[in-house]
Image 1 (cartoon, rainbow, N blue to C red):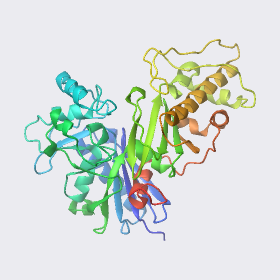
Image 2: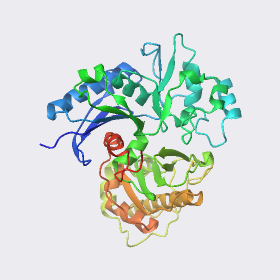
Image 3: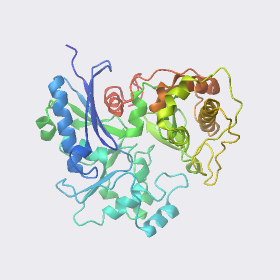
Length: 424
């Protein structure tokens, strides 16, 4: 029987998923539990119970005695306050929350570098300043930090990806002085490590969940970065397009790119950077224009070999973030042909144009030249759309090893994130 070697844990927006990989990176099992089955999604106790239940299901499928690395990813910007004993103080501050203190936001705007992702109404740094005011707080952690800390039996470590939006310098692996100036005492923040760095062995709580004493907890990452790593993209120039409700592109680059005006910032993956941006186009536009019940029939009628010549920019409403940055940017969906099949293909061609322009924008800003694309999300299985996209983008489209972020987290602990072993 092939033995388990790596465990990856994903704390996503709706639940916990965990994957077990063998020493070659093959997926042996994936299981998960939804938060809604247990309680509120902003309750750390619910996260822990969901993890315990998930590991229980995994143990029923295969032994975990051989697991030697454990790595956790979490939602970017979700924060937890703990006391001296490691107990949680108050509810978590979730990734989608908005900062309430305008004065703190103003201080961050004054002090943070212009392209810092710690800026903005949802600033995790601003929310951390507010959480630090709770009585008895001794540390502010990210979601993945807290789970990894419980597994180790000690807190105080984070990774450069989760810490980025809280103000961390991912290259120096340090908290800049301006973070303290914004109102958050540096002593409340965890030490920053490269994603995939071994942190230490599991503790008693992890042993009670069935993990072996020889397993080592590794510094984690965000769920978005873990999803990228799950696909098998591992060389500079490899990219992943997510075709969900919006269209998101991510590119592994030798060069760091930060451009806040386009919503672009760089996550450090070893000696490389994961750069990307998100357009407001995507699946939500298709559902609004055509309805879910018609998509299959319209897809079957696609003729990628016969371009429509329509120059659409499909948006639900004015405003675009990337590759154009303009809050008033208008949708372009005229002229509309009488044939809905032609209209549908024209919309997909417009989305392919936006995707290609997005990758061109990253290269224009200094990122490594695109060499391949993998696709995840609901649109990945649409062969006609894939043909339209590949014709526009002009690089090889490669299959994804997995779409599960938990698989990416496990690969991070096993390989340092990249199968070539170059990341950590």
